[in-house]
Image: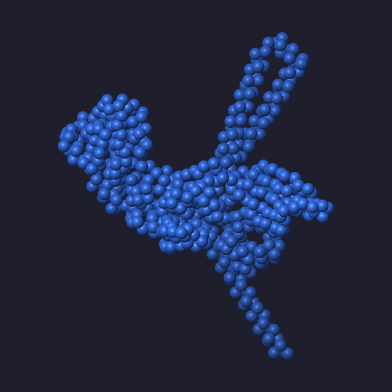
Length: 628
């Protein structure tokens, strides 16, 4: 279940800060006024997927303060800045949220909901690298023989812990570089720089009596802002062409975003200025006969053209722009054109605002209406969902799982592209070598053959072909795996369910799965090889609260008895619709529930039969005793 925090400062006085906190959790809305300490306790309690704020400058006075905050929150929690390029008030209105900008709790609520709609930018200060530093926890000081013995003991402890961490990283196949500082009798310090984010590292910071281990994410040179989703600002643009060209840009609520004029303004520069404010939906002019520049701009943007029925009078232009000041008449005329175009659509746009519920991009719907699409068709074409509908999808397929699978697919595709590039280079090299052989004269060819040069070239070509076949096979296997992963991802969107895989039914394999993924209440476990299973392993899984076990292999009677006693069905995969890859598996939820209910009923039936058998045996023994 996803959780989103929205935060805004209530007051800051004498070093004490109070925050307005708005929480969206399990379709509940929670409002609190909290201190900084209470805020961090709630973050640890709820472990939100997103913490959203209006602007990071309001909460953090420096980059160092921001970094300390991000180090303190859970690694999987993202900090999102809502109002980067547009104000919070504008974005709230665009997505149908009503707020009082003077009320911090309203701003916190708007931040939380806008982040849940995919609005805002993730604040990123760490690269996908982690630094592990293993060093002494105590000073060795100066001294003689006894001090040397003490120094050797500490340095040996540092070396032992360093080697254990390094072996752990090697076991899970992580890529890293190391830096060693030898000390008397061992290591004084060891540093591992790992090419993986901190969330993937199986080691946390800790201290012992002699050794301290620090695990830190590597910081970026500057703060980066990564958009949660691509949103486009749609505009109405007025143009006044001529020796001095003027451009005025309005948003779809009629607000003036910018106006500029320039002599001998190049067409490409005009386009760049318009796009710097957004994507124009309407290109407007104050002339009834469309000027060439206006027609050219309309065609370039595929926008709707607005022209008045007759040329606009100067009095009307002045009336339309009476609230603004301009450098010249060209800017006035361009702005009047844009405002007149907006007024022609104003009633329709206001009607859209009234009829669209919160959570939808009102500007996107307004754009469709301006282009002549009905409101009903616009909603259908855009397939816009309310926040509540989106949340159902998020609950069914966790964002972390999708990101993990998307990342794996992307890595495989990148590796495939690299291999294809290498193959092309190898083919080019082969063709060059063949060309060299053809270009050689017979006399030179015989001479080179005597020197065994040709033999070396042929041998090299053979090795290249061999390598080419090997790469082709690798690409084929990678493509097959990509197709399997894409199929599984599609099945998850269609209602299939992810399950966890045990490659072998051993305690080591169970411990591995617990460490990497976790085993919890309600989990479904697929066991690829159930041979050699013991009673203790079955008990351990049942104690974790698993729901069912899927296996095709032979399982020991002791294990089967434990599972049945604890009410955990053991199901053959042939009875289900299941797709299994190396370490990912999905099942058809509906089919599984049918088989699961049937097995539970069978288990309950056998329990009743066993009880009845015990009762009959008891009655029989009583009868025999009575007759004696």
